Amino acid sequence: MNSGDLPWGAGESGSPAHEHAKHASYVFLIDDTGAVHPVPHGLYVALARDGAGSAAFAGTRLRLADWYVRLSDGSPARVVNEWYGWVSFDERGRFDPSPDLPQRPVRPPGAQTMDTSALPTAEERKTMEAVLFGGEWPPHEDMFDPGSGAQG
Image (cartoon, rainbow, N blue to C red; front, side, top):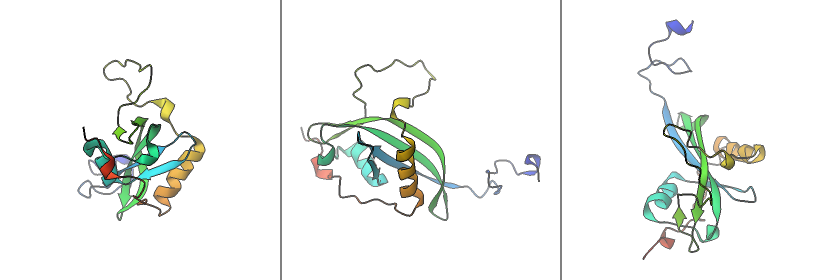
């Protein structure tokens, strides 16, 4: 079968267009020691929207990896898109999604938004893949404290 024989919109697996592939986003924080911290989706939403935080990360700047993953039977099957950037936690451990880089480069409209300085090392990537594809997801949620958010 050649690509001209595939139904319009068929995925790489050759599945018909009406069988939409399911996807999910998986987030990791990487600290300055190279330790990888998987972040469950609900906690990431709480961090980004609700002011949750983590005393363990108070006063730090971390790399954030956001992987968009194709699912197969509800399990991660393949990374289809990746984004990397920097995030910060204030002195109280509250999440700040905007990086605290001293010199933020100005990007023209349409330019790449991923900060390549936040890319994982080969070893960090292996760790993330092991967690995601090795059955270790979802991670433990005890490192984050929804009650440590901003209150004033």
